[in-house]
Image 1 (cartoon, one colour):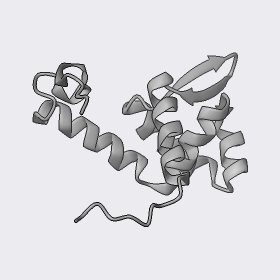
Image 2 (tube, helix red, strand yellow):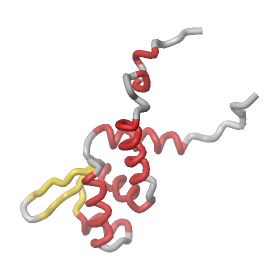
Image 3 (cartoon, one colour):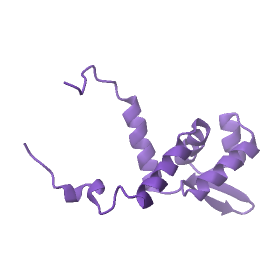
Image 4 (cartoon, helix red, strand yellow):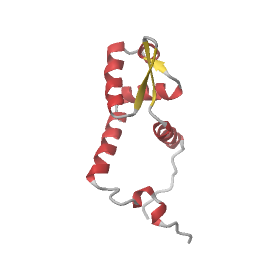
Length: 118
């Protein structure tokens, strides 16, 4: 059986389960656990979007979208880019877009009939 060294795992990093790393990660999942916020972030992964464009495409009010974007910006999940008088929102970085792509791929996988418990 081929084993990979634990040192190459991101979980093997010193203090990976300490509160100073786990709490912010839990907060990230809490924010993304809200379906409305998740839909907003996914809209921003596809392309730069203005509040009005996001609101219209998701059937939400502009004020609700702005409220969620404020929380998402504070958590560094999205970032704002000003172009003239217009502000556009986009996924903060490749980590966010990559994580969401991986999670979407995971939920699209067919479930195995095999159980993990023997």
